[in-house]
Image 1 (cartoon, helix red, strand yellow):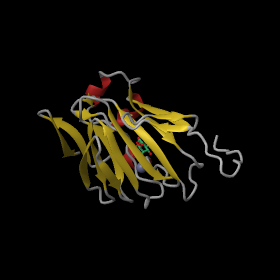
Image 2: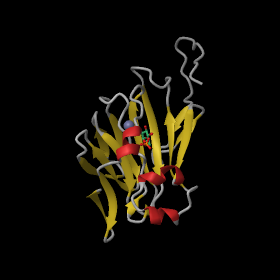
Image 3: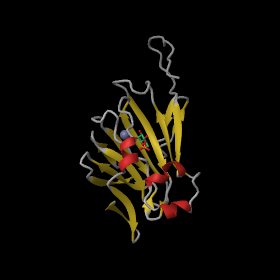
Amino acid sequence: MNQKQEIPANTILKPSQFFKITRGSMEGSEVANSQRTLGEMASYYMDQAALQKLDPNEIIYRVQSHMAVPEGSPGGIYFGTTFIKPGQVGKEYFMTKGHFHSKPECGEYYFCIKGTGVLILMNRQRVCRGEHMASGTLHYVPGETAHRVANCGNEELVFSACWPSDAGHNYEEIEKNGFSSRLLEHHGAAQLVNG
Ligand code: M6P
Ligand code: ZN
């Protein structure tokens, strides 16, 4: 996929990969697609009784990414867009799994294309903070910081991201211990709540 033919000097190539700025969607032969269902994320949600009433096959979010160098290569950068459906499991908003980086010092940029949500950041001391996301907001995720996005709006939340190709994803810690705070709906508003 990433094998490039030798290109004669001074050639001006037609673009082959596209990023639709207003929608965040990516197109091109090198764009990879993945998705997460509610069933795969069952253990991540607090309200297991509410979860049982929902369809485990429902796709909660999907990710498009352009990874121009093999995963783990030092020096490269990756680009991707995540699309999170609106919805809740009980009071908890639909969200990404969230992760630390396998190379923990690596940072990442997130920026919101459309919709509204909260970027939840958790440091190594398990202290959480949130940043509101809406069209045009830019967020720097520092190293050593777990990151997750929850959609607290009524429409799809779309955000793009840029991260080092050797950052990797460390999901284990979140799978085991979760985040120390959850984004819950309280009287119609989103709140970060311990637990
Ligand atoms: C962003 C990036 C990706 C990540 C995706 C979904 O696009 O951070 O690396 O995979 O969000 O987040 P997660 O992997 O935590 O489910
Ligand atoms: Zn990341």
